[in-house]
Amino acid sequence: MLPSPVLDCPHCGSPGQTGLFCSACDIYMPDPTGTVKKVTYNRRFWGSYLLEGVLYLVTLIIGWYIWLAFTAKDAQTPAKKLVDVYVLDIETGQPVSAGRIWQREVLVKQLLSGVVSAAIGVAWLIDYLWVLFDRNRQALHDKVSRTVVVYAPHGLPSSLRRPDEVLTGGARALPGRGVKSVAEELRELARLRDEGIITDEEYERKRQELVDRL
Image (cartoon, rainbow, N blue to C red; front, side, top):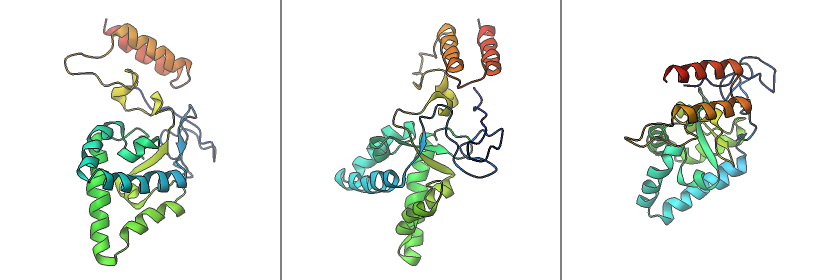
């Protein structure tokens, strides 16, 4: 497992930040490649919320859940897949698992809205409008799920992938096939170092681990 990159907060300068949010000023931390951005309100509301609702109806609900079974492994819902946004863990900065997506979309979002709506009738509206006033573009269901939505038009970089994806270029190993050869992993590790995603010390430590496997 490669450690998350350690960054200085570009907003307040606080050193040693490793997550998506600065522990000092609570502002979203851009990834070191600069390809992942805080999602805009328009993309979050119009491109995700409303589009999700349209897809939900067009696919007759059951089709949306079938679609979700394919997109959840990439930390996305069907609508999020179409607008290039991802759901990341607020603590680790890595994409959430498929199980967390199902939990967020079904248990948290829908059940929370259903229970509160029964009491005050406008829970769904409060949930969505919360994004307007939250500096990190989080909805209430994000707060409960400990997640944040980010915009990544080119996909998530290696530094923000789950540990099981980093050394395999984002591809998951198939049952019975194993992972890349040590030589391929060494080349991938060198690429991560050359792109500044990992430090020289991290590179040497991981390289030695791979060499020890020979």
